[in-house]
Length: 197
Image (tube, rainbow, N blue to C red):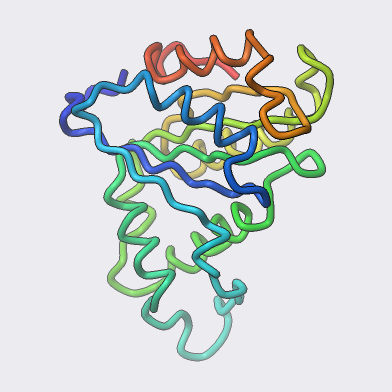
């Protein structure tokens, strides 16, 4: 586990499925059930927030303006968390649109005066729970997604805690993936030092 006492940890679960209560969320909630009661959990649907399109303003006079809602609220939730969990089904070998948009907005947060966003993220832990529609045991289709978040954690000087890849297509299918369920139940228990994708 992180060096932070359990009572000081705060997990932010970032839901990004196009389907409410889909297989990926079911798997993430199985993982979350292993957390001690003293660990705070916040669950946010990125799709429900209606984030604005990301605009690259790096070379625009005036640069990036102060954040406004809903982005400012999401920023506060992000920096308040010790652990960020992407609950992201594998779409076309990558992140769903809302999760990718969230990461794109990180680029803007870097440059908003006074936020110190990148410095605040150092040392936090990034996790992934994903489900693809491949046959059980075939994780290759999710490998680019896992690598995206692993590289993101490295760039941000965060820890990459690990990933669980489940399998299923129809609602509830992942509950038949015994291996993924067992991995989910152990994900936060084993902690980032020994977690593996």
